[in-house]
Length: 333
Image (cartoon, rainbow, N blue to C red; front, side, top):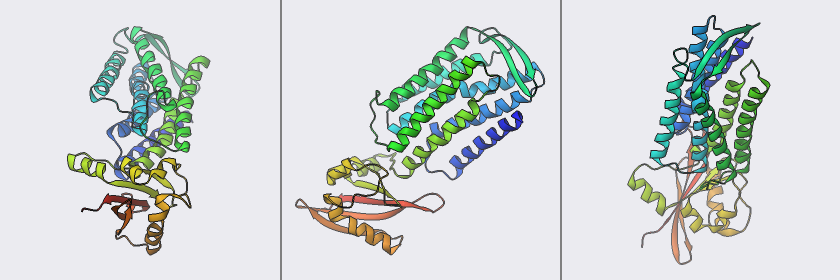
């Protein structure tokens, strides 16, 4: 039964990964790597559960440590991406290099005393587990894990400066996954459970993390060349989902419509007040009623300046309507 649970966990992780690479919306390298790590580690837990001798168990253990070494760091990096906390490329490179170095010592298990001094295979019913004596490099692994757990909390609590607003629901989900992951890991070590719960915990964390990631990827703009970046700086963009909830905007849109700063993310558009309701609410409703894919364009005067707007539909890769985008730009004189 336990082996089946680990196999099911592995299958779920694979399905999440396949969704991300085939049907997802613009997932970053770090987001896909996080799920890949969980897939490899989940496979290791299943391999350990069916191991018949110590060499098999040690090989499975080396797969399992892929989660323990890389997942906390990648959770931290992905949460930074959600909050738009910038990590310099050189620092990210060093972070990956250190984790790979630690994993290099994991590969010495069974050949040296650096990571494990000794290991013995045990079986209690259908539970297969190892009794281990840790070596000096295992301390480096533990320090790195707790360090990234602490950094996760610092980012989410706002101690590390954040640049992106996200909804209260997403903030709560991220806090929950962080404390849930940390609490289960510490509880396992304190109680000395022979059944490993971490593959299931990391999959719950991955699913919870995918919710804000998917929304932010859908309702966002990314530019990778100078032309796109310049255009994004000059034009305003407002994102609204199909339930007419405010999903965010760029800085230029705040300049055109200051009241957007007061709007709560993922809440219905306010019914009155502000420039948006004066100039854009009726065109938006008209566009929705028409149910056409063509862009709706128009213009209005704002403080002696003529602004041009365009309203269009946001769709995912499958062509399903997710919401609406409003583009704003000053008219050329």
